[in-house]
Length: 204
Ligand code: TYD
Image (cartoon, rainbow, N blue to C red; front, side, top):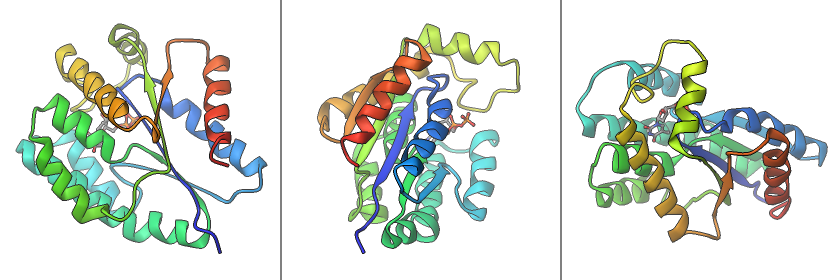
């Protein structure tokens, strides 16, 4: 049995990736793939409890980073690795690039430490493809403001935090252009959908 493929979705809050994740799952299922759709932080019973804490409780910044990797360890063991081994495709809303972008870029923590944790938690496994939804901060924050709901700890951060997150994502994309494909998310849903499907088709 061939190992399945692992696709991750990234971007600043309000980049609109969530609306395209369901579309990619449908697109792949229509091509005969079995798809597991999941998210981080979360994706397991324990991970969802950690997500609740991460999104709403104040904590030391390094605790935040380590809990992201702890939730990821559980997620890999319970969900991602078994699915890939079965030959399923895994599509995941955020993964380790988000830790580099948010805890590294946004919070300013030492990215060298994440490289060690990353090696420990999934040194043997990287996504086959990462779609980075990129758009100007002003557009993203306008979208969040229009949603009129309670914001989590990350969404409540100031504009300069999100600008650093965006830059850190773009730096990671520049360093790994084969894996991370930047999608211009400041265009019509239809155009983005086409671009996303074209990119995913390349690894089918
Ligand atoms: P997100 O995935 O955007 O969910 P929703 O669409 O429901 O708002 O929210 C998760 C938040 O967690 C997001 O603001 C980014 C943050 N995050 C990190 O800071 N580091 C990480 O490693 C991960 C996976 C997420």
